[in-house]
Amino acid sequence: MAALNSQLEDLPLHLSESVERRAAGWAADGNSRRLWDGDERLWTSSGEANWLGWLGIAADCLQLRRLAEEVRGRYSHALLLGMGGSSLCPEVLRLCFGVQDGFPDFAILDSTDPGQIADCEAAIDLESTLFVSASKSGSTLETALLTQHFLDRLAEAVGPARAASQFVAITDPGSGLESKARKLGFGRVFHGLPSIGGRYSALSHFGMVPAAVMGLDVDRLLLGAQAMRAACGPGVSPEENPGVRLGLVLGAAALAGRDKLTFVTSPGVSWLGAWIEQLVAESTGKSGKGIVPVDGETLGEPSSYALDRIFVRVALDSDIDQAPCQTLGALAKLGHPVVRIGIRQLEDLGQEFFRWEVATAVAGAVLRINPFDQPDVESAKVAARALTSTYEAEGSLPAAEPFLEESGVRLFAAPGHARRLLGSSGSGGVASVLRAHMRSAGEGDYIALLAYLNRNADAEAALRRIRDAIRPAFGVATCLGFGPRFLHSTGQLHKGGADNGVFLQIGCDCGSDIPVSGRGLSFGVVEAAQALGDFSVLTGLGRRALRIHVAARQDDTLARLEEAFAEALQ
Image 1 (cartoon, rainbow, N blue to C red):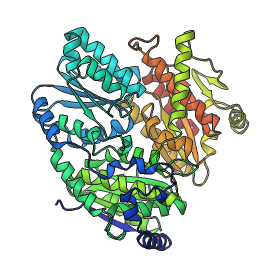
Image 2 (cartoon, rainbow, N blue to C red):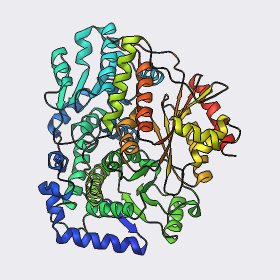
Image 3 (cartoon, helix red, strand yellow):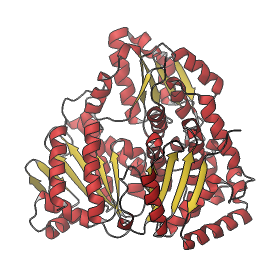
Image 4 (cartoon, rainbow, N blue to C red):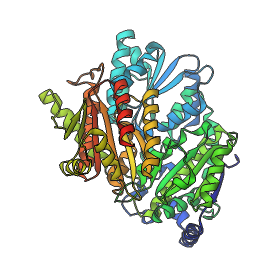
């Protein structure tokens, strides 16, 4: 059995005592056994027992080894078309491990942004690319549209039969995607397990089929996961159980007001935070409760943090950087809870997938919510579908009037919030309205940038600079997400969690658009409908949301945004 990754805690006395009380109660009530037995009374008795298949390791290693041998030396590229739980684990693996000798350069496309689709297509050789279409339900909008787009593009070059043979589907049995794959003659179909939700599917075929295509040692990844599974087993005491212990810490911290789960990752595993973010946010953000994952925020001075934080350091043992360690030590001395997780080597990432799945389920039990449903994700999907139907029927999306327009920058908000912003913004210009909106963030709140843009390096860098300026200016946690991908993860938290988010949705004019196969619309229209649907649900729930649309292409938009935020933060 593989050796375990380490886990250490440095908790303030009051939180440590709370965790110990909960651990004692967890042991007395036999809750670890109840978790493994599927006793849904541990949560809310609302069907949780139907979603515990992830407690097993649901991947067929023999089939995965055969797939790897079929792929080796045959394809120059591989492209996964999926969203949320179907895309984030593969993304972590690709970014952590890189490209393996003899195996395709693996990329992930989880966007409807036309620029991002075009950039992705330009980076691959269509005729030597293996496409992996991943959707648990088999009906995920983005996956369906992207799958048909690339099927059509490849069929133009090599014909329909060969095009279909270069596709692999990962989906639950009997889904629409499976039917399509069988009908068209996809090269392979891998089944998911119906009792595993998308965000808990890393160690199932949704994570391990891409790992095999990349040429990773799937057996080694799963061996590590099995070691963590044993350590988190039903007979292990809460004090010695890594997943249970972490979940009790996270849940107790959230109930004590420390609900901003802030990741401090080392370079070799920095991308793991995005996977944990979607797992925790979508699982806990509901019923007016939630843990807010803060991934990718630059570590600041210890004295600059409010009392709503818990810090988790996730680092490769070989990544030696004393600066974050010193800062975390100073944070602990100031009374901030700090958890340190050490990953022995990259092949032990499988351990972390299982640790965090258990921890999230346990935190859900502490918060008394169902960590396996996502009731508010569907609301944005419904709104987007209604808007795309309107476009197909009428040729345009519903028009909306900005409450402020200045130099091509248009601002939108719910009427009441717009009046408040104009009333408190002084000059009434864009920068002053931005300032007033961000000033609405008070103690315990967070500010989230929600960008419906091409998620390229320039956009990520510009928005990171804006984010880095916001946190010290307003003293609150910050989050950054790109749509529509965040709709399948943190979007649930934004809508179903506590009303402690201040949202800035960012969009711009579409450049060269791409038509959607077989539909009277384009990917640019789909992205716009998703953004509008997301915004309408946020405002309908009374969330503090401001939509910023810049009438310019993306490069100019980013420059204007940086100028506007720089002025707003003066």
